[in-house]
Image (spheres, rainbow, N blue to C red):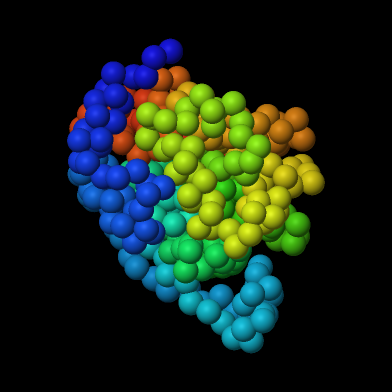
Length: 329
């Protein structure tokens, strides 16, 4: 179907800001522009009642999910932001360990603060948003290490956050969804139990070379471009050969069997559409319970625009479907 008219209005408004394309920017400028975009288009005032607490978790070297911590010989701190929905003190709630998008380069806790508030409220879930290390200052696999270790910490400490240790999930959007998928794979391989779900919003599941059909069909004009994705990959990886590592591209994992149930969202006008759909299909083929929501007429990152000009009904619908999925398991 054609691009949704309200989405086109949003794309036109973003274009009117006059920002150069992402692939022509330095990481610093790209971060500034993303922050401006999120502030203008992704404010969600109706979710202001969520209680938010900044915390620092300490990941001990011994037994860590990451060999990097052991090599340093000491624990390391990771910042998180904990979102508790209104009335969350009534009893242990499900927990979503959330990893923000932004191509491993431009996202922050702040850019995804509105969405975390919305998710906490709609799903009645404690959201733990992880401040993982960004590229290019910290190349692959730094973000993977942080996200995997943070998830393992939450599994062990959910009760301290008002959460139910038997209902811990991982989730994220775009690069954050990739990190969630990879954390689930690594914890499975390590034998860590307790993770019960993966919420993957338009994940980066494969490497850009060779390009999929959606990389070619949606290369320009719909927000995230093919050139921007290549820019993100180039800043994330130290070498193109790392694009063949399943920790960067989870579609390359030898097996997806034994993963927790998954909620996967893909969008028609997204360069990442085909790889996200392939990941959902492969998980289902290998015995994972998958809920795949394909949204026609929408683009990459549409789900973040659930409550601001121009109101995207599809975004709110996906948010509520995700909330239903969280509580169905």
